[in-house]
Length: 280
Picture 1: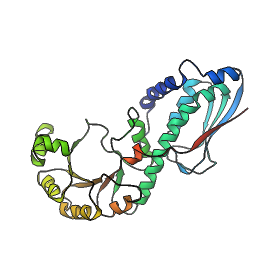
Picture 2: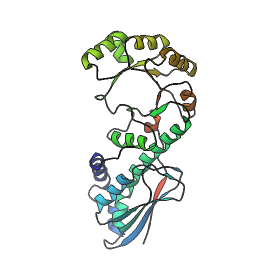
Picture 3: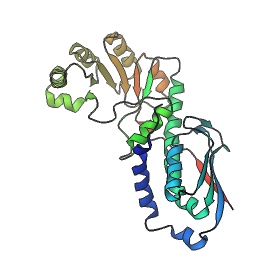
């Protein structure tokens, strides 16, 4: 798990606070005196894997640098209902103003880390690694892919500019798998790896024969996946993707694939249930 550098999330949190707070927190300003002090704690209400503690802490500090924060768990730690994640002391107004944005990030990222951890655990004992996709929330990719790493998964390509993945539409426009691979190889040179999305066993063989470094088995059934692994025979990396659900990921891993890419760990992961409790 790589550390999430503050420069990667500060602007994102600032935009979220601007969106939520606008010209001010009317409710808190109307009913809470500016000098009122309080204690607060973020508590887990469901079991899961925590991610985004420093992101949430930054949201509180950005609203009020005078807030005192105590971090009780670290990213990657497992929590159970009732466990405390973060404690706060200081302005009651500030806590309540920052609450929603801080929790939005912490709940979202912890939900992704939790679902990733479940998938990693389900494939334990196999050679398959769990990776994410580009099916992320616009503007939040760096955070969501970080949460995948916190959950024990790995990142697929971050964007279009850091890896080559030739998909069916590229193949259609290029006039075939071989011509697409050859064009990519000529453009990129020998230092880049090339992956090709395939839908049939015939395409698997064609991609490997063309020199693809990896083949992505798109929406194949388990029997066909296993046959594809046998057909490749170690000549290329084999990735499974498309239609893989939490209840089937273990079966996919047992086909012998090297990589399983899961869109749902970012686009459909439920937020982890966390709550801020404030007392005066």
